[in-house]
Image (cartoon, rainbow, N blue to C red):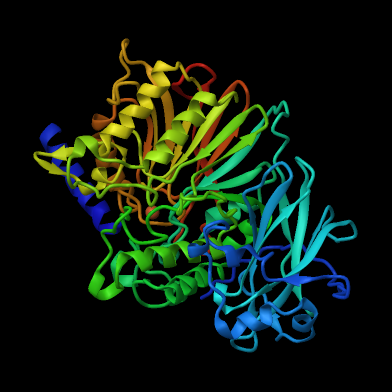
Amino acid sequence: MPAVHHILAVSAAAVLLALATSTHAVEFAAPSFAASKISRDTLVARYDDNLAFKSPYANVPKLAVPLSAHHKAKLLKPAPQLEAGGPAAKFLHGVASGDPLENAVIILTRVTPTAANAPVTVQYQVATDAGFSAIVKQGAVVTSDDVGYSVKVDVQGLTPATTYFYRFTVDDQVSTVGRTKTLVSNTADLASLNMAVVSCSNMPHGYFHAYEAIAKRNDVDFVLALGDYLYEYDLPGYKPVGGAMPASRNPVPAKVISNITDYRMRYAQYKSDPQLQLLHAQKPWIVVWDDHEFADNAWVGGAVNQDDARDGPWGPRKLAGMRAFHENIPIRPSQAVGDEYRVYRSFQIGNLVDLIMLDTRIDGRAEQAKGDRASRQIMGAAQEQWLHSSLTSSKAKWRILGNQVMFATLPEKLFAWELPITADAWVGYPKPRQALLDLLAKNKISNTVMLTGDFHGSVASDIPADGSGKVKANAPAVMTEFVGPSITSASPAQDSAILNGLAKPVLGLANPSAKFIDLYRHGYMFVAVTPAKVRVEYTYVKSVKTLDGGATAVAAVLETASGSNRITTVQ
Ligand SMILES: [Fe+2]
C-alpha cells in the first residue's frame, strides 16, 4: 500500500465526509559469551544442508538455486577439501530464527566474505544455555554467492517448549548469539500463548523502535510478521511524511529494486539495522510476505509498481523477490510438489491455537479492480480449499488467521469507481470473502480471529456473517479481525493526529462494527491467547522520527471472549 493510495484514501475520506458530514546508534545489550574455538575435525560441511540452496522450494528442482559452474565442482568435492580453504568472513547482518515446530526450528544468518566469489564454510551450534556449555546440535554448511551468502538450517530433534541459544562461526569470527524457542507439543494442554504482531517496516520512514520494544519483552513467545518486511521503492517512490530521516536510511540501492542483486542488497540494508537485528536475535519469527517484498499491490501476474521497461518482465522479478525472501527470512521451504510458490502454511500450537498463515498476495490473486468483480479470486483454488479444510478440521480452542489485507468492510466504490485502496483489500474480492464467512457460519465454527497487516492503521472489528459492516440478528458476527499499525510506514492519516480526527469518523461510517480505529500511530499488537479469550493490546511508540522516540504505551485493550465472536473494549 503506497503513499499515493494513502493520499487517495484520505482524499476519498474527505469527500465521503463532506457527503455524509546513519546508521543510528541505538544501544542494546546483545547476549555475550566468550568465543570458543570450535574444532572442525569432526564436522562435515555440506552445501545441501544449507536450505538456501533449495530456496524457495526443496522439492521443485526448477525453482532450486542452480549452483554456478565455478562453484559446482568445488562444492561437490568431499567436504574436507573445502574446509581446508575458504576465505574469512564477517557477520554483519545478524542472526534469525523462525517457523518453530515442537521439535525443530529454522536458524539463519548471512556472511560477508573478505574474498569475492569464494564459497565459505559456516559452522553452527545450538545449546540450551547462552554460554554454550550444553550444546545439543552442531554442524557446518557451505554457502556462496549463488545464494547471497545466506545460511539457513532446519535444526531438528529438539525438545518441545524449550528455549535454545544458537550461533554461527567462521574461523575466529562469531555471530551474535540468537535465542529461540520451540513450540509446545501438538497435544499439549496449553494455558496461554503470547505473540507480537508486526507489519510494514519502511526504513526510510522511521526508526524500528517497535522491534526493539518487542525484543525487550519477556512475555512474547514469537513474532508474527504479516508482510512488508521491506519496501521496493526508491526514495521518491514512497516519500516519508513528517520529515526525512537521515540519509543512511535511504533505500539501497537507490532505485526501484527489480532483480536478485537489488533485492539482496535491500534485504542486506534492512538487516543492518540494529533494532531489527535485536528482535530477530531475541525471538523466533513466523513470517509471510505481502506485496512490497515484490512490488506495490502485487498480484499473481503483475503489480501496480511494475514497469516492464524499467523493471524487466514480471515473472523473473517475482522469482527474484521470492528467492531473496527465502534467503533472508527464517521460513521453512515448502515440501509441496506442484504448488510452486506456496508459503501458506499452518502451525498447531498445543490444543490452544491453530495458526493459519495465508498468502493472499502471490499464490493466486487476480488483478485488482479488473475483470468480473463477482468472480475475482484472492487465493489460488488449492489454497482456498486448504484454508476451508483447515478451519473445518481444526480442533483447537482458537483459529488464528495470519492475513495480509483488511477483511473488514470498507467503501467499495466512489460512484462507479472502485477505490484502489479498497479494491486491493478483501472487499475487492467478494466471492472468496463471502465463501469464508459462509463456511464459518454454516459449520458453526467459532473462535476464529483474523490478524491483519498492510493497512498501516489500527482497526478492530466484528465481522458479520453477511459481510456487511453491521452485526444483525440474522447475520451475527462469525469472526473478529484486528488490523495492526505499521512499524514505520506512513499511516492512512499521514501520521497526523488532525487528519486522524477527520478520517476516523468516515471509516466508522463505512464500518459500524469497528470497535477501535487509529489511523496515525505506529507500533505493534500484543496478542495474548488463553482458553477463555484473545486479548489484543494496541501498543504504540512515541515517535518513529527521533532516536529517543522509542517509549511505548498501550492505547487500547480489546478482547474476544470464547464463543462470542465479538470484540469487547476493555480500555
Ligand atoms: Fe505496508
